Structure formats: structure tokens, C-alpha cells
Length: 61
Image (cartoon, rainbow, N blue to C red; front, side, top):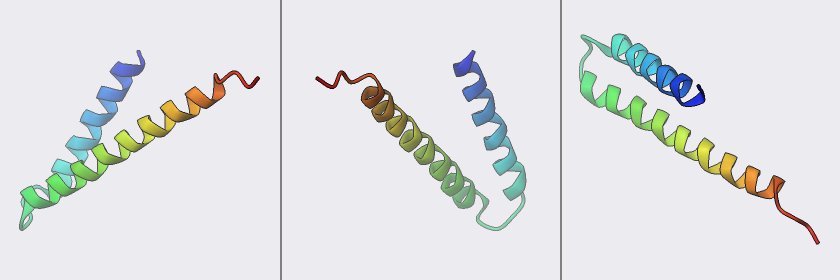
């Protein structure tokens, strides 16, 4: 369910970026820049979430 929601939100945001820049000058570069920032942000959030979950489950002895 979580993966389906993540993919749906990615598709929706990509579509919103595409419709925002459709028909503008240098549209492909702008779209790729915004999608790249979105993907980079997602990777950073997933990485930090993984670190947080490891620290939350760490056994302090």
C-alpha cells in the first residue's frame, strides 16, 4: 500500500511538473531539473529514514 501511494504521488507530481512547463522555452531542461530535484529529495529522505530506523532499533548496552 505504501509503495503504491509513493508511486502514485511521484506520477502525480511528475505530471504537474510536465503541465507547468509544457510549451515554455527550454521546457525539457526545466522538467529534467525539477524531476531531478524531486528524485534527489526522495533519495535523501529514504536514506535519513533508514538511518533513523536503525538508530531507533539499536540496542544500547
